[in-house]
Image (cartoon, rainbow, N blue to C red; front, side):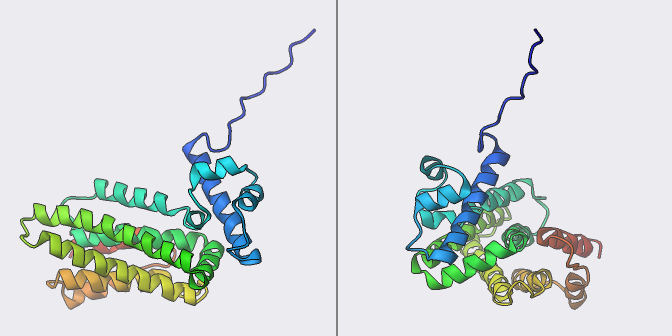
Length: 242
């Protein structure tokens, strides 16, 4: 009698970081499709879980309520922003670093066009989702302000707290302007060019020594095939060479 071949152990969905990320996004995709098809109020947590191929208990391991599922990737984006800040060059302009980090939000939206457009429609028609979106934007702004406050303080700026709050608000406003313009265009607007121009505007406001020639460099180095945070890094590298 021969031994049957051993089977590889089956990895439970969500047992690894990558698996948890996929499951969160599967739940988000199922939710947004159901919200659009049936309406937000008419859709239940059980229906979302079933559409994603999991049970109700699994849903609540990831989200406290159905309004949270629509913004499933935002925890990941915040973590990526904080990692970017931790790894940032201490000699780099803090505002440029913050703009590069927040551009990860735009990259995330652009990577999931269908979900992004459906979510945009839903947040404009469902007040509770709109409120959740506002809270999410506020969270990004607080992460930006915390980083900038520390950097400005290191530079000996006596107005570090005020300057950080104002700069973070400006960066968040630039990000929101570009994002909403892109979403209103149905994803057809050139989000990379718009973002680089908007962030350059903010950087100029907090670093007035930038010359007209440097401003031209900001636009000249942009490519639509490059992720936005990489575009900002490329801009900074070009300016450093001047």
